Length: 168
Ligand code: HEC
Image (cartoon, rainbow, N blue to C red; front, top):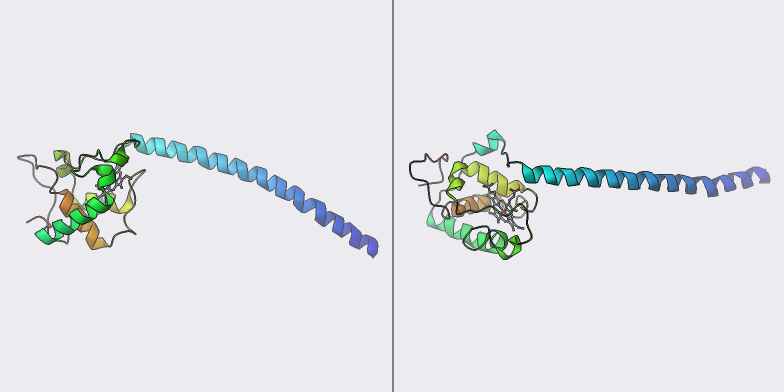
């Protein structure tokens, strides 16, 4: 009986250690693999246009772009966005120096090629260095931000605004 006990003790003291060691090897391989996948993912994202799901792009802006909304949007923008996108929205904020891809230029007329829903979705979900603001700001605040962004870019003359609602 005592021998059996001793044997089990011995087994207990060696085997789990070995298993732990093997486990560590597997774990470090796994971490390496995940690291490589993430690196390729970031590289692929940097090279690809930022696609917005059609349903999200079609979303209507429920917040009228009145003075109050634009003022609130500006307040939030200066707080949370200007560091990267720049105070005037040119994409040249102090924190933009190290970023690649660079923060978007909100003063480009190209901004009007995107719907309000599309901008809202990008602000909400983020990508790469562009943070996710879904959990930071309530829905209405994110629409205020869209309304403020709309004031930064001159409209291309003759273009049909793809947005409906939200613009007076
Ligand atoms: C840490 C830097 C950083 C901050 C802070 C930041 N952005 Fe960005 N933003 C980026 C980068 C980088 C991109 C480009 C991302 C890409 O193309 O993958 C981007 C892209 C965008 C786009 C997409 C533009 C387009 O036409 O595709 C919008 C809209 C945007 N940002 C709005 C905002 C708003 C609004 C805020 C503040 C609430 C904000 N960003 C804060 C870095 C930042």
